[in-house]
Image 1 (cartoon, rainbow, N blue to C red):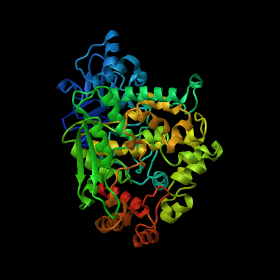
Image 2: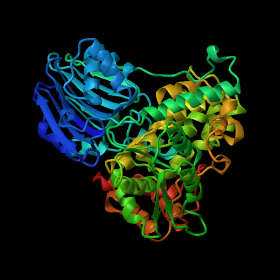
Image 3: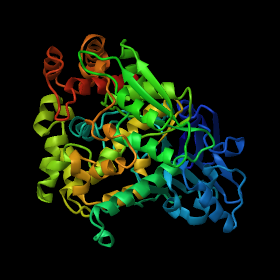
Amino acid sequence: MCGLAGELRRDGSRADIGAVERMAATMSDRGPDDGGSWSHGSVAFGHRRLKIIDLSAASNQPIVDSAAGLTGVFNGCIYNYRELREQLQARGHTFFSSGDSEVVVKAYAEWGVDFVDHLVGMFAVAITERDSGRLVLARDRLGIKPLYVDERPGVVRFASTLPALLAGGGVDTGIDPVALTHYLSFHSVVPAPRTILDGIRKLPPATVRVYQPDGRVDERRYWDPPFGRDPRRADWSEQDWQDALLESLTTAVQRRMVADVPVGVLLSGGLDSSLVVALLAEQGQRGLATFSIGFDAVGGREGDEFVYSDLVAQRFDTDHHQIRVAARDLVPPLEAAVAAMSEPMVSHDCVAFYLLSQEVAKHLKVVQSGQGADEILGGYHWYPPLARVGRDQALDTYATAFFDRDAAGLAQVLNPEYLTAGDPAREFAAAHLGRAGAQDAVDAGLRIDTTVMLVDDPVKRVDNMTMAHGLEARVPFLDHEFVELAATCPPELKLAQGGKGVLKEIGRRVLPWEVIDRPKGYFPVPGLTHLEGKLLDRVRDALHAPAARRRGLFRDGYVDGLLRDPNAELTPLRGNKLWQLGLLEMWLQNHGID
Protein backbone atom coordinates (compact mmCIF):
# COMPACT_ATOMS: atom_id res chain seq x y z
CA MET A 1 0.00 0.00 0.00
CA CYS A 2 1.46 3.30 -1.00
CA GLY A 3 0.93 6.71 -2.52
CA LEU A 4 1.78 7.53 -6.12
CA ALA A 5 2.00 10.74 -8.10
CA GLY A 6 3.01 11.75 -11.58
CA GLU A 7 2.92 14.19 -14.46
CA LEU A 8 2.71 13.90 -18.23
CA ARG A 9 3.55 16.97 -20.28
CA ARG A 10 1.70 17.20 -23.57
CA ASP A 11 3.12 20.53 -24.73
CA GLY A 12 6.64 19.42 -25.65
CA SER A 13 8.25 20.52 -22.39
CA ARG A 14 9.94 18.41 -19.74
CA ALA A 15 7.97 17.11 -16.78
CA ASP A 16 8.10 19.20 -13.62
CA ILE A 17 9.83 16.81 -11.24
CA GLY A 18 9.68 19.41 -8.47
CA ALA A 19 5.88 19.48 -8.60
CA VAL A 20 5.74 15.69 -8.59
CA GLU A 21 8.02 15.50 -5.57
CA ARG A 22 5.84 18.02 -3.73
CA MET A 23 2.81 15.91 -4.51
CA ALA A 24 4.49 12.72 -3.28
CA ALA A 25 5.72 14.39 -0.11
CA THR A 26 2.13 15.03 1.02
CA MET A 27 1.56 11.25 1.06
CA SER A 28 4.29 10.27 3.51
CA ASP A 29 1.53 9.02 5.84
CA ARG A 30 0.42 6.54 3.17
CA GLY A 31 4.01 5.44 2.58
CA PRO A 32 6.20 6.16 5.61
CA ASP A 33 8.89 3.56 4.82
CA ASP A 34 10.50 4.89 1.64
CA GLY A 35 10.15 7.42 -1.15
CA GLY A 36 11.46 7.88 -4.64
CA SER A 37 11.10 9.85 -7.85
CA TRP A 38 11.97 9.44 -11.51
CA SER A 39 11.72 11.54 -14.66
CA HIS A 40 12.42 11.09 -18.33
CA GLY A 41 11.48 13.72 -20.84
CA SER A 42 7.76 14.46 -20.63
CA VAL A 43 6.97 12.04 -17.81
CA ALA A 44 7.78 12.09 -14.09
CA PHE A 45 6.72 9.79 -11.27
CA GLY A 46 6.87 10.08 -7.50
CA HIS A 47 6.15 7.44 -4.89
CA ARG A 48 5.82 6.82 -1.16
CA ARG A 49 6.14 3.22 0.01
CA LEU A 50 4.60 1.20 2.82
CA LYS A 51 6.61 -2.03 2.97
CA ILE A 52 4.26 -5.03 3.00
CA ILE A 53 5.57 -7.46 0.37
CA ASP A 54 9.31 -7.85 -0.32
CA LEU A 55 10.68 -5.64 2.43
CA SER A 56 13.96 -5.12 0.58
CA ALA A 57 15.03 -2.06 -1.39
CA ALA A 58 14.59 -4.09 -4.60
CA SER A 59 10.85 -3.29 -4.49
CA ASN A 60 11.29 0.42 -3.94
CA GLN A 61 9.47 2.54 -6.49
CA PRO A 62 9.27 3.86 -9.15
CA ILE A 63 9.97 0.48 -10.73
CA VAL A 64 12.28 0.89 -13.73
CA ASP A 65 12.49 -2.05 -16.13
CA SER A 66 15.16 -0.98 -18.61
CA ALA A 67 14.96 -4.20 -20.64
CA ALA A 68 11.25 -3.73 -21.28
CA GLY A 69 11.52 0.05 -21.60
CA LEU A 70 8.89 0.53 -18.88
CA THR A 71 8.63 2.53 -15.66
CA GLY A 72 5.73 2.23 -13.24
CA VAL A 73 4.33 3.28 -9.90
CA PHE A 74 1.83 1.15 -8.05
CA ASN A 75 -0.45 1.43 -5.03
CA GLY A 76 -2.23 -1.62 -3.62
CA CYS A 77 -1.67 -5.34 -3.37
CA ILE A 78 -1.83 -8.10 -5.99
CA TYR A 79 -2.89 -11.22 -4.15
CA ASN A 80 -2.04 -13.59 -7.01
CA TYR A 81 1.37 -12.06 -7.70
CA ARG A 82 3.24 -15.32 -7.01
CA GLU A 83 1.16 -17.23 -9.55
CA LEU A 84 1.57 -14.42 -12.09
CA ARG A 85 5.30 -14.34 -11.48
CA GLU A 86 5.53 -18.05 -12.33
CA GLN A 87 3.51 -17.53 -15.51
CA LEU A 88 5.67 -14.62 -16.57
CA GLN A 89 8.90 -16.46 -15.84
CA ALA A 90 7.64 -19.33 -17.99
CA ARG A 91 7.19 -16.77 -20.79
CA GLY A 92 10.80 -15.62 -20.49
CA HIS A 93 10.60 -12.69 -18.08
CA THR A 94 13.30 -12.29 -15.44
CA PHE A 95 12.83 -10.51 -12.10
CA PHE A 96 15.11 -8.40 -9.93
CA SER A 97 12.72 -8.26 -6.93
CA SER A 98 10.38 -10.65 -5.13
CA GLY A 99 7.47 -8.23 -4.77
CA ASP A 100 4.15 -7.60 -6.50
CA SER A 101 5.04 -4.17 -7.90
CA GLU A 102 7.47 -5.56 -10.44
CA VAL A 103 4.95 -8.25 -11.37
CA VAL A 104 2.50 -5.52 -12.36
CA VAL A 105 5.04 -3.89 -14.69
CA LYS A 106 6.06 -7.23 -16.20
CA ALA A 107 2.39 -8.14 -16.66
CA TYR A 108 1.99 -4.98 -18.74
CA ALA A 109 5.09 -5.89 -20.72
CA GLU A 110 3.50 -9.26 -21.55
CA TRP A 111 -0.18 -8.42 -22.04
CA GLY A 112 -0.29 -4.70 -22.70
CA VAL A 113 -3.44 -2.92 -21.54
CA ASP A 114 -5.07 -6.32 -20.93
CA PHE A 115 -2.72 -6.80 -17.97
CA VAL A 116 -5.52 -5.68 -15.64
CA ASP A 117 -7.55 -8.78 -16.51
CA HIS A 118 -4.85 -10.93 -14.91
CA LEU A 119 -4.62 -9.02 -11.62
CA VAL A 120 -6.46 -10.21 -8.53
CA GLY A 121 -6.35 -7.52 -5.90
CA MET A 122 -6.68 -3.81 -5.25
CA PHE A 123 -4.60 -1.42 -7.27
CA ALA A 124 -4.00 1.94 -8.85
CA VAL A 125 -1.13 1.98 -11.30
CA ALA A 126 0.65 4.28 -13.75
CA ILE A 127 3.02 2.88 -16.39
CA THR A 128 4.89 4.73 -19.10
CA GLU A 129 6.63 3.37 -22.18
CA ARG A 130 10.09 4.82 -22.69
CA ASP A 131 10.18 4.48 -26.46
CA SER A 132 6.66 5.64 -27.34
CA GLY A 133 5.93 8.06 -24.48
CA ARG A 134 2.56 6.39 -23.92
CA LEU A 135 1.12 6.70 -20.38
CA VAL A 136 -1.30 4.13 -18.96
CA LEU A 137 -3.43 4.64 -15.84
CA ALA A 138 -5.51 1.84 -14.35
CA ARG A 139 -7.68 1.25 -11.32
CA ASP A 140 -9.00 -1.94 -9.72
CA ARG A 141 -12.47 -3.34 -10.38
CA LEU A 142 -14.16 -2.12 -7.18
CA GLY A 143 -12.25 1.16 -6.88
CA ILE A 144 -10.64 0.15 -3.61
CA LYS A 145 -7.51 2.12 -4.46
CA PRO A 146 -8.02 5.77 -5.47
CA LEU A 147 -6.55 7.66 -8.40
CA TYR A 148 -7.21 11.39 -8.91
CA VAL A 149 -6.43 13.27 -12.12
CA ASP A 150 -5.83 16.96 -12.88
CA GLU A 151 -5.98 17.34 -16.65
CA ARG A 152 -5.39 20.74 -18.26
CA PRO A 153 -4.15 21.95 -21.63
CA GLY A 154 -0.62 20.66 -22.03
CA VAL A 155 -0.36 18.67 -18.80
CA VAL A 156 -1.86 15.72 -16.95
CA ARG A 157 -1.16 15.14 -13.29
CA PHE A 158 -2.35 12.23 -11.17
CA ALA A 159 -2.04 11.10 -7.56
CA SER A 160 -3.46 8.77 -4.94
CA THR A 161 -5.04 11.68 -3.07
CA LEU A 162 -6.75 14.90 -4.04
CA PRO A 163 -4.66 17.04 -1.63
CA ALA A 164 -1.52 15.77 -3.35
CA LEU A 165 -2.72 17.35 -6.60
CA LEU A 166 -3.39 20.60 -4.75
CA ALA A 167 0.23 20.56 -3.58
CA GLY A 168 1.34 20.34 -7.19
CA GLY A 169 -0.15 23.80 -7.77
CA GLY A 170 -2.29 25.41 -10.43
CA VAL A 171 -5.46 23.39 -9.78
CA ASP A 172 -8.82 24.89 -10.70
CA THR A 173 -10.41 24.86 -7.25
CA GLY A 174 -13.79 26.18 -8.28
CA ILE A 175 -16.75 24.20 -6.97
CA ASP A 176 -18.30 21.77 -9.45
CA PRO A 177 -22.03 22.52 -9.13
CA VAL A 178 -23.07 19.08 -10.39
CA ALA A 179 -20.80 17.39 -7.85
CA LEU A 180 -22.22 19.71 -5.19
CA THR A 181 -25.76 18.55 -5.94
CA HIS A 182 -24.60 14.93 -5.74
CA TYR A 183 -23.02 15.62 -2.35
CA LEU A 184 -26.18 17.23 -1.00
CA SER A 185 -28.60 14.74 -2.59
CA PHE A 186 -26.85 11.37 -2.97
CA HIS A 187 -25.88 11.13 0.71
CA SER A 188 -22.46 12.75 0.11
CA VAL A 189 -21.64 10.31 -2.72
CA VAL A 190 -20.01 12.05 -5.69
CA PRO A 191 -19.74 9.40 -8.43
CA ALA A 192 -16.65 9.18 -10.60
CA PRO A 193 -15.35 10.91 -12.55
CA ARG A 194 -16.41 14.07 -10.69
CA THR A 195 -15.08 15.51 -7.45
CA ILE A 196 -16.31 18.57 -5.59
CA LEU A 197 -13.60 20.61 -7.39
CA ASP A 198 -13.86 21.64 -11.04
CA GLY A 199 -10.22 20.88 -11.77
CA ILE A 200 -9.88 17.38 -10.34
CA ARG A 201 -11.47 14.18 -11.54
CA LYS A 202 -11.31 10.52 -10.46
CA LEU A 203 -10.34 7.68 -12.76
CA PRO A 204 -13.45 5.48 -12.55
CA PRO A 205 -13.13 1.98 -11.08
CA ALA A 206 -12.42 -0.90 -13.48
CA THR A 207 -10.96 1.54 -15.99
CA VAL A 208 -7.81 1.64 -18.11
CA ARG A 209 -6.96 5.01 -19.63
CA VAL A 210 -4.20 5.43 -22.22
CA TYR A 211 -2.69 8.81 -23.09
CA GLN A 212 -1.30 8.30 -26.59
CA PRO A 213 1.72 10.19 -27.98
CA ASP A 214 -0.42 11.73 -30.73
CA GLY A 215 -2.74 13.38 -28.18
CA ARG A 216 -5.55 10.80 -28.27
CA VAL A 217 -6.94 9.43 -25.03
CA ASP A 218 -8.32 5.90 -25.11
CA GLU A 219 -10.36 4.52 -22.24
CA ARG A 220 -12.15 1.26 -21.57
CA ARG A 221 -14.10 -0.25 -18.70
CA TYR A 222 -12.75 -3.76 -18.33
CA TRP A 223 -15.17 -5.20 -15.73
CA ASP A 224 -18.94 -4.87 -15.50
CA PRO A 225 -20.49 -7.96 -13.87
CA PRO A 226 -24.11 -8.85 -14.63
CA PHE A 227 -26.56 -8.61 -11.74
CA GLY A 228 -29.06 -11.31 -12.57
CA ARG A 229 -29.62 -15.03 -12.68
CA ASP A 230 -27.01 -17.23 -14.32
CA PRO A 231 -28.65 -20.11 -16.26
CA ARG A 232 -25.79 -22.38 -15.21
CA ARG A 233 -26.95 -22.00 -11.59
CA ALA A 234 -30.67 -22.22 -12.22
CA ASP A 235 -30.99 -25.52 -10.36
CA TRP A 236 -28.97 -24.48 -7.31
CA SER A 237 -30.63 -24.96 -3.95
CA GLU A 238 -30.27 -22.59 -1.02
CA GLN A 239 -27.67 -24.98 0.36
CA ASP A 240 -25.76 -24.85 -2.92
CA TRP A 241 -25.64 -21.05 -2.75
CA GLN A 242 -24.42 -21.11 0.84
CA ASP A 243 -21.70 -23.62 -0.03
CA ALA A 244 -20.54 -21.69 -3.09
CA LEU A 245 -20.45 -18.31 -1.34
CA LEU A 246 -18.68 -19.80 1.67
CA GLU A 247 -16.04 -21.37 -0.55
CA SER A 248 -15.52 -18.10 -2.45
CA LEU A 249 -15.33 -16.01 0.73
CA THR A 250 -12.89 -18.49 2.28
CA THR A 251 -10.66 -18.06 -0.76
CA ALA A 252 -10.99 -14.27 -0.47
CA VAL A 253 -9.87 -14.08 3.16
CA GLN A 254 -7.07 -16.55 2.49
CA ARG A 255 -5.80 -14.44 -0.42
CA ARG A 256 -5.66 -11.39 1.82
CA MET A 257 -3.17 -13.00 4.18
CA VAL A 258 -0.48 -12.62 1.49
CA ALA A 259 2.17 -10.43 3.12
CA ASP A 260 5.69 -10.43 4.51
CA VAL A 261 4.39 -8.80 7.70
CA PRO A 262 1.64 -9.94 10.13
CA VAL A 263 -2.02 -9.40 9.15
CA GLY A 264 -4.77 -8.66 11.71
CA VAL A 265 -8.52 -8.02 11.60
CA LEU A 266 -10.67 -5.02 12.52
CA LEU A 267 -13.29 -6.81 14.62
CA SER A 268 -16.43 -4.76 15.21
CA GLY A 269 -18.35 -7.72 16.61
CA GLY A 270 -20.80 -7.68 13.71
CA LEU A 271 -21.49 -10.60 11.41
CA ASP A 272 -19.15 -9.52 8.62
CA SER A 273 -15.88 -8.97 10.49
CA SER A 274 -16.65 -11.88 12.84
CA LEU A 275 -17.00 -14.19 9.86
CA VAL A 276 -13.61 -13.07 8.56
CA VAL A 277 -12.07 -14.02 11.92
CA ALA A 278 -13.87 -17.37 11.96
CA LEU A 279 -12.77 -18.32 8.45
CA LEU A 280 -9.16 -17.40 9.19
CA ALA A 281 -9.29 -19.50 12.36
CA GLU A 282 -10.65 -22.43 10.35
CA GLN A 283 -7.68 -22.06 8.02
CA GLY A 284 -5.36 -22.53 10.96
CA GLN A 285 -4.54 -18.94 11.89
CA ARG A 286 -3.54 -18.89 15.56
CA GLY A 287 -2.99 -15.83 17.73
CA LEU A 288 -4.68 -13.62 15.13
CA ALA A 289 -4.50 -9.97 16.23
CA THR A 290 -7.98 -8.41 16.40
CA PHE A 291 -8.99 -4.86 17.26
CA SER A 292 -12.22 -3.22 18.43
CA ILE A 293 -13.01 0.37 19.36
CA GLY A 294 -15.57 1.79 21.74
CA PHE A 295 -16.57 5.21 23.03
CA ASP A 296 -18.07 6.26 26.34
CA ALA A 297 -21.86 6.38 26.35
CA VAL A 298 -23.35 9.84 25.85
CA GLY A 299 -26.94 10.80 26.62
CA GLY A 300 -27.93 7.21 27.25
CA ARG A 301 -26.61 6.00 23.88
CA GLU A 302 -24.14 3.15 24.11
CA GLY A 303 -20.78 3.77 22.47
CA ASP A 304 -19.34 0.29 22.18
CA GLU A 305 -20.20 -3.24 21.05
CA PHE A 306 -17.50 -4.99 23.03
CA VAL A 307 -19.89 -7.67 24.26
CA TYR A 308 -19.99 -9.10 20.73
CA SER A 309 -16.36 -8.58 19.73
CA ASP A 310 -15.24 -10.12 23.04
CA LEU A 311 -17.44 -13.14 22.37
CA VAL A 312 -15.83 -13.72 18.97
CA ALA A 313 -12.32 -13.09 20.26
CA GLN A 314 -12.83 -15.64 23.03
CA ARG A 315 -14.37 -18.23 20.72
CA PHE A 316 -11.43 -18.11 18.31
CA ASP A 317 -8.72 -17.34 20.86
CA THR A 318 -7.48 -14.20 19.13
CA ASP A 319 -4.94 -11.73 20.45
CA HIS A 320 -7.64 -9.18 21.09
CA HIS A 321 -7.19 -5.46 21.70
CA GLN A 322 -10.00 -3.28 23.07
CA ILE A 323 -9.44 0.36 22.24
CA ARG A 324 -11.49 2.52 24.60
CA VAL A 325 -11.95 6.19 23.82
CA ALA A 326 -12.93 8.12 26.93
CA ALA A 327 -15.40 10.97 26.83
CA ARG A 328 -13.43 13.97 25.64
CA ASP A 329 -13.35 16.79 23.19
CA LEU A 330 -13.85 15.12 19.81
CA VAL A 331 -13.06 18.23 17.80
CA PRO A 332 -9.27 17.58 17.52
CA PRO A 333 -9.64 14.04 16.12
CA LEU A 334 -12.43 15.31 13.90
CA GLU A 335 -10.10 17.98 12.50
CA ALA A 336 -7.46 15.32 11.90
CA ALA A 337 -9.98 13.07 10.15
CA VAL A 338 -11.12 15.93 7.91
CA ALA A 339 -7.49 16.63 7.00
CA ALA A 340 -7.12 12.96 6.01
CA MET A 341 -10.15 13.04 3.67
CA SER A 342 -9.43 13.18 -0.03
CA GLU A 343 -13.04 14.30 -0.47
CA PRO A 344 -15.63 15.50 2.06
CA MET A 345 -17.32 12.54 3.78
CA VAL A 346 -20.15 13.09 6.25
CA SER A 347 -20.12 9.71 8.00
CA HIS A 348 -19.33 9.85 11.70
CA ASP A 349 -17.56 6.53 11.15
CA CYS A 350 -14.61 8.52 9.81
CA VAL A 351 -13.60 9.65 13.28
CA ALA A 352 -13.96 6.14 14.69
CA PHE A 353 -11.92 4.66 11.84
CA TYR A 354 -9.31 7.39 12.24
CA LEU A 355 -8.87 6.74 15.96
CA LEU A 356 -8.99 2.97 15.52
CA SER A 357 -6.39 3.06 12.76
CA GLN A 358 -4.16 5.31 14.86
CA GLU A 359 -4.01 2.65 17.58
CA VAL A 360 -3.87 -0.41 15.30
CA ALA A 361 -0.93 1.06 13.39
CA LYS A 362 1.11 0.85 16.60
CA HIS A 363 0.85 -2.94 16.32
CA LEU A 364 0.44 -3.86 12.64
CA LYS A 365 0.74 -2.63 9.06
CA VAL A 366 -2.06 -4.74 7.54
CA VAL A 367 -5.61 -5.64 8.59
CA GLN A 368 -8.63 -7.26 7.02
CA SER A 369 -11.98 -5.51 7.35
CA GLY A 370 -15.62 -6.51 6.85
CA GLN A 371 -16.66 -3.54 4.69
CA GLY A 372 -18.84 -4.24 1.67
CA ALA A 373 -21.03 -7.12 2.82
CA ASP A 374 -24.15 -4.96 3.20
CA GLU A 375 -23.93 -3.66 -0.36
CA ILE A 376 -22.97 -7.02 -1.88
CA LEU A 377 -25.46 -9.18 0.00
CA GLY A 378 -28.45 -6.94 0.67
CA GLY A 379 -28.01 -5.75 4.24
CA TYR A 380 -29.66 -2.34 4.05
CA HIS A 381 -33.26 -1.41 4.76
CA TRP A 382 -33.96 0.02 1.31
CA TYR A 383 -33.59 -3.32 -0.48
CA PRO A 384 -36.85 -5.00 0.70
CA PRO A 385 -39.01 -2.15 -0.70
CA LEU A 386 -37.24 -2.63 -4.05
CA ALA A 387 -38.33 -6.27 -4.00
CA ARG A 388 -41.96 -5.13 -4.04
CA VAL A 389 -41.75 -2.96 -7.16
CA GLY A 390 -40.89 -3.33 -10.82
CA ARG A 391 -37.88 -1.83 -12.58
CA ASP A 392 -40.01 1.14 -13.62
CA GLN A 393 -40.52 2.08 -9.95
CA ALA A 394 -36.99 1.38 -8.78
CA LEU A 395 -35.86 5.00 -9.00
CA ASP A 396 -38.65 6.43 -6.85
CA THR A 397 -38.30 3.67 -4.28
CA TYR A 398 -34.52 3.99 -4.06
CA ALA A 399 -34.53 7.80 -3.96
CA THR A 400 -37.18 7.91 -1.23
CA ALA A 401 -35.04 5.75 1.02
CA PHE A 402 -31.54 6.97 0.18
CA PHE A 403 -31.57 10.51 -1.21
CA ASP A 404 -31.15 13.44 1.17
CA ARG A 405 -32.90 16.09 -0.95
CA ASP A 406 -34.78 16.52 -4.20
CA ALA A 407 -34.50 19.47 -6.59
CA ALA A 408 -36.89 21.56 -4.52
CA GLY A 409 -34.84 20.86 -1.41
CA LEU A 410 -31.64 21.90 -3.17
CA ALA A 411 -33.25 25.20 -4.17
CA GLN A 412 -33.87 25.92 -0.48
CA VAL A 413 -30.22 25.24 0.41
CA LEU A 414 -28.08 26.59 -2.41
CA ASN A 415 -27.60 30.11 -3.64
CA PRO A 416 -28.77 30.51 -7.28
CA GLU A 417 -25.29 30.57 -8.82
CA TYR A 418 -24.68 27.01 -7.58
CA LEU A 419 -27.98 25.55 -8.73
CA THR A 420 -27.94 23.38 -11.83
CA ALA A 421 -30.62 22.66 -14.38
CA GLY A 422 -32.67 19.59 -13.59
CA ASP A 423 -31.75 17.17 -10.82
CA PRO A 424 -28.32 15.66 -11.68
CA ALA A 425 -28.21 13.14 -8.84
CA ARG A 426 -31.64 11.77 -9.65
CA GLU A 427 -30.81 11.71 -13.35
CA PHE A 428 -27.61 9.78 -12.62
CA ALA A 429 -29.48 7.26 -10.50
CA ALA A 430 -32.20 6.90 -13.14
CA ALA A 431 -29.65 6.09 -15.84
CA HIS A 432 -27.77 3.64 -13.63
CA LEU A 433 -30.85 1.85 -12.30
CA GLY A 434 -32.39 1.69 -15.75
CA ARG A 435 -29.54 0.35 -17.83
CA ALA A 436 -29.25 -3.25 -18.96
CA GLY A 437 -27.42 -5.87 -16.93
CA ALA A 438 -29.67 -6.00 -13.86
CA GLN A 439 -32.61 -8.39 -13.77
CA ASP A 440 -34.99 -6.72 -11.32
CA ALA A 441 -35.24 -3.69 -9.06
CA VAL A 442 -33.27 -5.31 -6.24
CA ASP A 443 -30.49 -6.28 -8.62
CA ALA A 444 -30.39 -2.72 -9.95
CA GLY A 445 -30.23 -1.30 -6.42
CA LEU A 446 -27.46 -3.69 -5.40
CA ARG A 447 -25.52 -2.80 -8.55
CA ILE A 448 -25.59 0.98 -8.00
CA ASP A 449 -24.60 0.49 -4.37
CA THR A 450 -21.81 -1.98 -5.19
CA THR A 451 -20.27 -0.09 -8.08
CA VAL A 452 -20.98 3.53 -7.07
CA MET A 453 -22.08 4.14 -3.48
CA LEU A 454 -19.72 1.59 -1.94
CA VAL A 455 -16.76 2.98 -3.90
CA ASP A 456 -17.32 6.63 -2.99
CA ASP A 457 -18.43 6.24 0.61
CA PRO A 458 -17.48 3.21 2.75
CA VAL A 459 -14.47 2.06 0.70
CA LYS A 460 -13.04 5.56 0.35
CA ARG A 461 -13.64 6.16 4.05
CA VAL A 462 -11.68 3.06 5.03
CA ASP A 463 -8.81 3.84 2.64
CA ASN A 464 -8.46 7.45 3.78
CA MET A 465 -8.65 6.83 7.52
CA THR A 466 -6.40 3.76 7.63
CA MET A 467 -3.78 5.15 5.26
CA ALA A 468 -3.56 8.32 7.34
CA HIS A 469 -1.57 6.10 9.70
CA GLY A 470 0.27 3.88 7.22
CA LEU A 471 -2.17 1.02 7.77
CA GLU A 472 -3.27 -1.15 4.84
CA ALA A 473 -6.90 -2.35 4.96
CA ARG A 474 -7.95 -5.34 2.87
CA VAL A 475 -11.60 -6.06 2.15
CA PRO A 476 -12.38 -9.72 1.35
CA PHE A 477 -16.07 -9.07 0.65
CA LEU A 478 -14.86 -7.00 -2.33
CA ASP A 479 -12.90 -9.84 -3.87
CA HIS A 480 -14.09 -9.47 -7.47
CA GLU A 481 -14.78 -13.19 -7.88
CA PHE A 482 -16.92 -13.18 -4.74
CA VAL A 483 -18.77 -10.10 -6.01
CA GLU A 484 -19.39 -11.75 -9.39
CA LEU A 485 -20.87 -14.81 -7.70
CA ALA A 486 -22.97 -12.82 -5.22
CA ALA A 487 -24.35 -10.64 -8.03
CA THR A 488 -26.05 -13.72 -9.51
CA CYS A 489 -27.49 -14.94 -6.18
CA PRO A 490 -31.32 -14.75 -6.05
CA PRO A 491 -32.41 -11.59 -4.18
CA GLU A 492 -34.77 -13.53 -1.90
CA LEU A 493 -31.79 -15.37 -0.41
CA LYS A 494 -29.98 -12.10 0.25
CA LEU A 495 -32.99 -10.31 1.75
CA ALA A 496 -34.08 -13.17 4.01
CA GLN A 497 -33.91 -12.78 7.80
CA GLY A 498 -33.91 -8.99 7.64
CA GLY A 499 -31.04 -8.83 5.14
CA LYS A 500 -27.91 -10.83 4.33
CA GLY A 501 -29.90 -14.01 4.98
CA VAL A 502 -27.58 -16.24 2.98
CA LEU A 503 -24.57 -14.84 4.85
CA LYS A 504 -26.29 -15.35 8.20
CA GLU A 505 -26.85 -18.99 7.33
CA ILE A 506 -23.17 -19.32 6.49
CA GLY A 507 -22.38 -17.67 9.80
CA ARG A 508 -24.48 -20.16 11.73
CA ARG A 509 -22.00 -22.84 10.75
CA VAL A 510 -19.09 -21.16 12.52
CA LEU A 511 -20.20 -18.23 14.74
CA PRO A 512 -21.97 -17.83 18.11
CA TRP A 513 -25.69 -17.25 17.52
CA GLU A 514 -25.62 -14.00 19.49
CA VAL A 515 -23.45 -12.39 16.82
CA ILE A 516 -25.79 -13.42 14.01
CA ASP A 517 -29.18 -12.59 15.51
CA ARG A 518 -28.22 -9.25 17.03
CA PRO A 519 -29.53 -5.89 15.79
CA LYS A 520 -27.50 -4.31 13.01
CA GLY A 521 -24.67 -2.22 14.42
CA TYR A 522 -22.48 0.65 13.26
CA PHE A 523 -19.32 2.28 14.49
CA PRO A 524 -20.93 4.22 17.34
CA VAL A 525 -19.62 7.71 18.06
CA PRO A 526 -22.25 9.12 20.43
CA GLY A 527 -20.51 12.46 20.85
CA LEU A 528 -20.89 13.17 17.13
CA THR A 529 -24.45 12.04 16.53
CA HIS A 530 -25.97 15.04 18.32
CA LEU A 531 -24.58 18.47 17.52
CA GLU A 532 -23.93 20.42 20.69
CA GLY A 533 -21.14 22.05 22.67
CA LYS A 534 -17.74 22.44 21.07
CA LEU A 535 -18.68 20.44 18.00
CA LEU A 536 -21.65 22.69 17.29
CA ASP A 537 -19.41 25.71 17.82
CA ARG A 538 -16.95 24.29 15.29
CA VAL A 539 -19.70 23.82 12.71
CA ARG A 540 -21.00 27.33 13.31
CA ASP A 541 -17.49 28.78 12.95
CA ALA A 542 -16.96 26.92 9.66
CA LEU A 543 -20.22 28.17 8.18
CA HIS A 544 -19.56 31.75 9.31
CA ALA A 545 -15.86 31.82 8.36
CA PRO A 546 -14.70 34.50 5.89
CA ALA A 547 -13.94 31.81 3.28
CA ALA A 548 -17.48 30.46 3.58
CA ARG A 549 -18.90 33.98 3.27
CA ARG A 550 -16.84 34.65 0.14
CA ARG A 551 -17.79 31.33 -1.39
CA GLY A 552 -21.49 31.78 -0.69
CA LEU A 553 -22.59 28.19 -1.29
CA PHE A 554 -25.58 28.20 1.03
CA ARG A 555 -28.50 30.55 1.58
CA ASP A 556 -28.02 32.53 4.78
CA GLY A 557 -31.60 32.05 5.88
CA TYR A 558 -31.38 28.27 5.53
CA VAL A 559 -28.13 28.07 7.49
CA ASP A 560 -29.46 30.36 10.23
CA GLY A 561 -32.56 28.21 10.55
CA LEU A 562 -30.48 25.06 11.00
CA LEU A 563 -28.24 26.73 13.56
CA ARG A 564 -31.26 27.80 15.63
CA ASP A 565 -32.32 24.16 15.96
CA PRO A 566 -29.18 22.14 15.09
CA ASN A 567 -30.64 18.65 15.37
CA ALA A 568 -34.10 19.16 13.94
CA GLU A 569 -33.53 18.44 10.24
CA LEU A 570 -32.44 14.90 9.39
CA THR A 571 -32.11 13.05 6.10
CA PRO A 572 -34.03 9.82 5.43
CA LEU A 573 -30.89 7.96 6.58
CA ARG A 574 -30.91 9.95 9.83
CA GLY A 575 -28.02 12.16 8.82
CA ASN A 576 -27.86 15.65 10.27
CA LYS A 577 -28.37 18.26 7.54
CA LEU A 578 -26.45 20.93 9.43
CA TRP A 579 -23.51 18.55 9.84
CA GLN A 580 -23.54 17.91 6.09
CA LEU A 581 -23.13 21.62 5.34
CA GLY A 582 -20.63 22.23 8.10
CA LEU A 583 -18.45 19.28 7.14
CA LEU A 584 -18.19 20.48 3.54
CA GLU A 585 -17.02 23.92 4.62
CA MET A 586 -14.62 22.41 7.17
CA TRP A 587 -13.09 20.27 4.43
CA LEU A 588 -12.76 23.14 1.94
CA GLN A 589 -11.18 25.42 4.52
CA ASN A 590 -8.88 22.70 5.88
CA HIS A 591 -7.45 22.16 2.40
CA GLY A 592 -6.97 25.87 1.77
CA ILE A 593 -9.72 26.20 -0.83
CA ASP A 594 -10.99 29.79 -0.80
